[in-house]
Amino acid sequence: MKRIALLSQRLANQIAAGEVVERPASVVKELLENSLDAGADRIEIDVEQGGAKLIRIRDNGSGIDREDLGLALSRHATSKIANLDDLENIASLGFRGEALASICSVSRLELVSRAANAAEDSAWRVQAQGQEMHTDISPAAHPQGTTVEVRDLFFNTPARRKFLRTEKTEFDRLEEVVKRLALSRFDVSFQLRHNQRSIHHLQAARTEQEKQRRVALVCGPAFVENSVRIDIEASGLRLWGWVSQPTFSRSQADLQYFYVNGRIIRDKLISHAVRQAYQDVLFHGRHPAFVLYLELQPALVDVNVHPTKHEVRFRDGRLVHDFLFRALHKALADVRPEDKLAMQVSRDEGRVDPETGEYLPPSTGSAAGEFGGQEHIRFSPLSYGGGGSAYSRPVSDSAGVSANHIAEQISAYAELAKDEEVPPLGYAIAQLHGIYILAQNRAGLVIVDMHAAHERITYERMKAAVLSEGIRAQPLLVPLSIAVSQAEADCAEQQAAGLFELGLGIERVASESILVRQVPVILASADIEQLVRDVLADVREHGSSERIRNYQDELLGTMACHGSVRANRQLTIPEMNALLRDMEQTERSGQCNHGRPTWVLQSIEQLDKLFLRGQ
Image 1 (cartoon, rainbow, N blue to C red):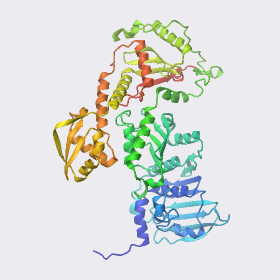
Image 2 (cartoon, rainbow, N blue to C red):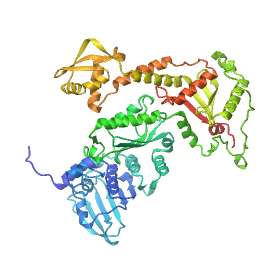
Image 3 (spheres, helix red, strand yellow):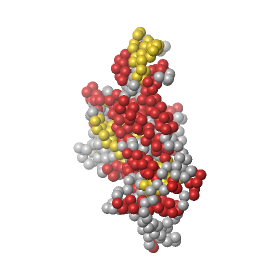
Image 4 (cartoon, rainbow, N blue to C red):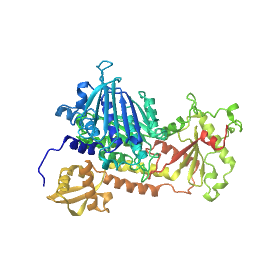
């Protein structure tokens, strides 16, 4: 082997660049984080050819003093930390002191800056590029703030340049970085241009409505319309943001933004907590969407565990995991039909009278179009017909329900609506093909999948009953001996009390052997050895395990499915109304156990569009 020698500064910087600068998006991320740390509230980003030819970022932050310009391009030079205490309480986005040095080692970099306390004509320019990276400082004209211009990325490392993708792909990744940072700082305006064409112009958002508008611009209006706003604080932790309803899901995990103290991260512990919260309400193979912000003391989280700072380590991971799970689980459980109804009706501006709550039909007149305006049909009030015999006939005769019976039910709805407030899911008026319940509320027509709805109601009641009794356990007639690793045996010994609460009685009998003496009654027929191994793996990875409860819920879900009303069963009007009232009181009633929706609303406006009314 060759003799040991110090690496040159240029080679050391290029090695560091391999960790920090993967592509143009990496450059934009590092420079934008520096701008945000400098206190900028207005940032402009110009890129050409996906960032490979040019990246220019201008901000109005605090700027850099002339004496520090040359030092700013040196390795391990930063103004954000000075000692170990600073490293343990990091409040900034960038702190390693390698970004600018790494970037200018693989590009032609120019930095122009004027410090906040400098005179108007005291701006300075520093230039550096690959090779030996010598700096050249000269006077320049520039307002307060900093402009960093990066040209010809990887011009001196052609092997790295060959790994760049197409211009569109690189720009898409760069745009995603801008979106993520725009969601992390609502108080900052961002402007992004690509090849002299404006792509995004996000104004600073300070009110709740403006923040929601920015989320809609970045994530799409459909996400905001189908999301739940949460803000929960406990145990020194605060979680706020937007989570999608289970019925609004994605085929990929591409609409998930999670921030810890303003820093976007992707963490296995957080992903696990979110998956658990959506476990029995999300359709299989689908992914939830969310924009969430976790705030905690900087000393309780270590952000210096990854070169690109995409991962963090929590001092008390179990506390964070349980807090996230409970907060999201509660937020999703608290969504009732009236909440979903309000979300949908709010999208139809001016459709509900705020004083009376009555539905307002589209205005008619000269703007009605060639079809002319039409009035809504009004049924004359009739006496309530109750659960007429038409709803107790076999399904084969259900198609023969007369118009008189339908008219009676609609008239009954009108009579009830006069005397009392109409429930969110309204009142049943008919049953369709023995599968769907048709109900009328103030907003329009509610269609309910009666089997899916009853399945959720039965499932939630069974879970509540089991929860009140706790997990029942039974001793094994012959204890099961399992050979495990020493780390798994240590975990079983340390977590014996917690595992016992789950119904598992585990005793360590050797350095690499455990004995299972007790299991939950509901799991008596399961593969105990595999279950114990999976539980220990979960406890080691996440500090807890939900496998026993998940297995239990799966069995309860199967029982609820087989115990619910089946298709082609005829229900009377009182039975249908009773089911609707139960749905309004049941948690997560908007989805069945498999994640399918249980009801949908067709508003009068949507129905009018189908029949071209008012056009």
